[in-house]
Length: 164
Image (cartoon, rainbow, N blue to C red):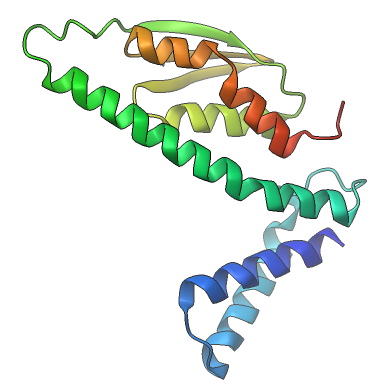
């Protein structure tokens, strides 16, 4: 069932992004989505014991997280721009290495957290060891954003709902 969900997701994305609805483009999308589903479907849904409804729920929650993370990336860009344009000796830059302990239960959840942190300007995930992430932060403000746990909670809501 999970392969069908992945195929439908990929084919839907193809249709949306191509904007072409003639037979040739739909056939190419169908073939492409089928091929990608066959070679990589196990990457998205690692837990095969979940029902189709649980997988679909995860897919439905992903866009909300993506909108939120894009907004956070925009905010971080503004912060980094302010740091860069502040006259003087870059007074707001207080780089540090921060250890963050995560409560995310799955490797995929930790992977999404680490990549979300790295995508956000001013922070880079340097190392993941078990449930600890080592993150380089450029300022006190970006460090505070790491420590508040909002990103971790949002990731848990999307990818780990029902795994308690």
